[in-house]
Length: 235
Figure (cartoon, rainbow, N blue to C red):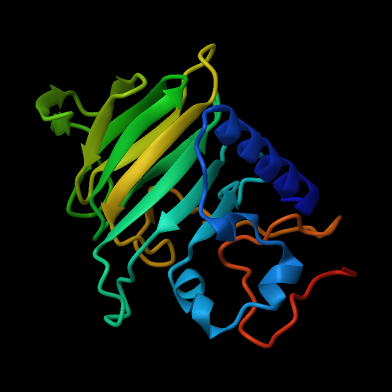
């Protein structure tokens, strides 16, 4: 992705959330220059991947396949010094924009439509070989109600509705055409995007970035270590 496109997506997201009176922790507004001055007191933000996460999953077409994720809080699956066993995210799912089919080995999560359009998802169980189970129906709980849908079935969440993704449940989701972008809440166990995503097809979790302008905000995997300057191409 071009840095200019990432900057644009972040600005658009800030405007969308402000229009819904949704406010973010201060670190979402820190500039690269401010990050360069942050010391070890910000270790939890760095270590646990809090902040902006804009990805096209390596496809090069963000509007078609992509996701904007904002990690507000998180523990750490690998570091026991962080006792927090939970995470919270906001996901901006654009109309018609698909998050590819995947599951998590460790993380369970609740997905909540917080406002905007309609969130559409397709669901499958997983075989022992970690392929799609195209035969077995899927049991899933939505707002305390057990639902049974056929393999590959479609579920829609309207504003206020939620669903629980259990471990090894394949899911892909997108914003319903004609209904607008969706503000999605995610409440889950600790999140680790480096090791806990099983994509059905090969996927790049974080984008390669073409530095065509200065960064407006840093992504969660770009923070400098204390005492290190933010590096880039000419900025």
